[in-house]
Image (cartoon, rainbow, N blue to C red):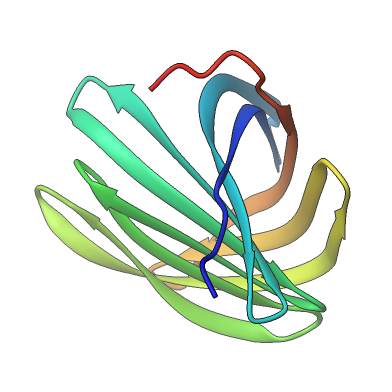
Length: 141
């Protein structure tokens, strides 16, 4: 059985709450959506100063995983109310990360993850990741 990848328009909004206030980052990209083995996958690429970063977001029930490859390598696993170790690799070194997911929601056209994030054992804030996506009828490939 082949898995169908559906072209999507994707909007990624990240809100970071830290002691000093909050920062919001938004990204609009084209990508693909597919469902496989009871999980949903969203794939997209973004071009940064360091180069292209490929991102895969996987969501299933009360778990999620964000994988990034290319110019930035990152593996952030999430499970509701559990602390999980991940990794973040940059040209100058690799960092251990810890996520504690407070909310993982997945509905039609929406992935919503709220989590506490620590890097190298130091709290880096509470992150709210809202990804909205809709089918892109004009193929851009």
